[in-house]
Length: 333
Image 1 (cartoon, rainbow, N blue to C red):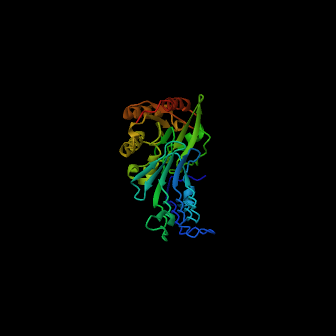
Image 2 (image 1 turned 60 degrees about the horizontal axis):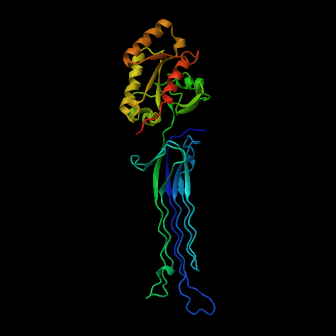
Image 3 (image 1 turned 180 degrees about the vertical axis):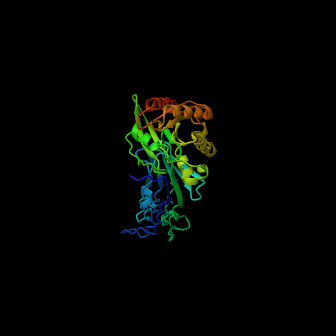
């Protein structure tokens, strides 16, 4: 299934049905009076979050959503049927923005959450409604009220326990493929990963979801390289796994670039716990690993794990550290 984390769609609730002009016609009843029923209410536009969805790809091919109109009123005081509500299914983690892309209308964070975003129009009144002591045979009825309509943006922020970040070609996808059953595209060139990948990690009887976020570059917090969209997927993670390519000449600079982008983006990311790992250690000598690890620890002020997805070096230790943060209870907002 292809991944899509942003889509623009048009939504319209149903129009209300028109009221009916009708008079009672029965044998031996000379003055039957009005019996035109009211129109039915139009259907609502309802969004509902489902945990078994993880992409907005369906909205690439289906972009217009209209709820059913209410039926017109009928004679014999019969009210028209209300239009069916239209339920639009979205993944958990979806945000709905107005057309300006700034006004947040909804944020779905739990499975089964529902929101009536647009209400259907009310039905019009039939002529029976207008009957009064001074007007015994009204011949007027009102049309139904129109439904609401608007364009909205859907933006998906993956809900994962662990977000894996780093510069392009840092080995994030390889790591995900080793610790889970996910099979992301892997190649020896930057920007192999163009969309986030999810994998479920099983470790010591626990399981948690890990998201491999496409490589970030300098200026990501401003949207460079689709950085703001990629960073959005890290917002909901409990812990960040920061991978540094050990084959780079200056690993400290690589760390500072990503750390700066995370801090400038905000969104609660700077406050999240971080696990730092020097990756691709299978390609380095022990002396080089020691020197680069020492330099990273000094710059970051935290423990640095030695990691090799190829030889599986350091993987159990990293998973144990990640599972500790994943199991911590969530803080009340």
